[in-house]
Image (cartoon, rainbow, N blue to C red; front, side, top):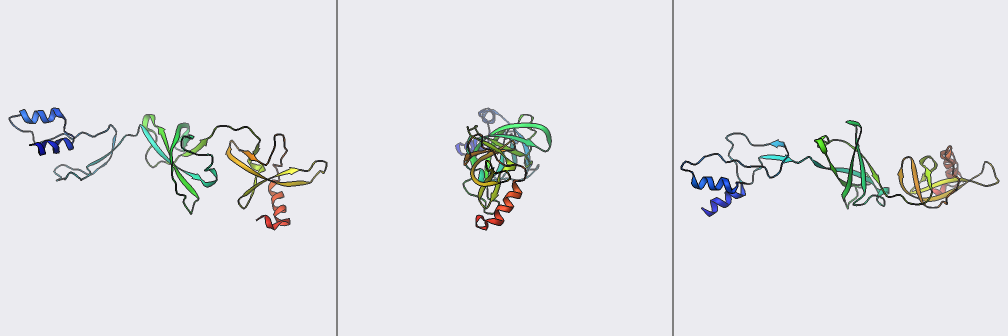
Length: 222
């Protein structure tokens, strides 16, 4: 009897259901097996009359009130995105709507093909509008830092290095190539961690042409 009771408890039978079994003169052959969580049924492997064992999966139930979003983080953004970072979520399916979440885990291994790592973002999902396997866009936010910022158009990449062009004072039409270390991009601008001072002027329009000319004159930059 003790073994039978333990089996019933493992199946999810409540104390009340077990008490009814003990008192009933005629045993009800049916047993209600409750789901351990509230949610929606994603898969159903059981049908009426199916013989099952304790290890067999009958249903898959998911609580979609909170969901995980898996985002690919570029290698260049590893310094800016960390566990606890805030994220803004948008979805092509819902134009103009946004969700807020935060990073709870970042994969330790980098994909050698895409040079990205997977970040897990936890998001409240009121109304369960975010669905499994949906595509979404993620924008990570980091605390602001004091220092200069430059438009994305001013930055040119040569190999793994980043450069801007500064006009030469008192020499119109002359520019100097200047290496910078960048922070994360936001709203069309980069924060500059090293290489520029506040009030420095940089070239935006035509910086790509200046890059091409610099590479032609200095092929060792590659």
